[in-house]
Length: 109
Image 1 (cartoon, rainbow, N blue to C red):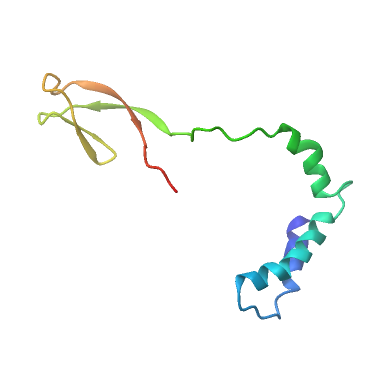
Image 2: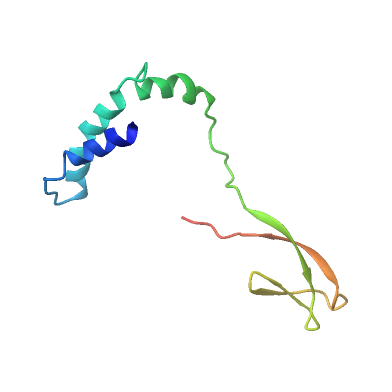
């Protein structure tokens, strides 16, 4: 149902020509407001403020860092391979199995 309504909104714009993203956004805004005001017992905005918004919490201060544990075996060259990257281990550990905690420290932004 929502797909048909949204598709109908974009179909109304099919014969128009736009020269900037701002022009497209200006043309879509009234259609989007009309779509969101469509009643499902209440408007989508009312449903959001009644049920979803009270359950929302602020984002954590620290970003989530994905990490996983892997089992690796140190080779004769004192290195373990994790995702095609090689890391050295102490010289006392050749040919031993290790449990490694790997995490991505790259930050986007």
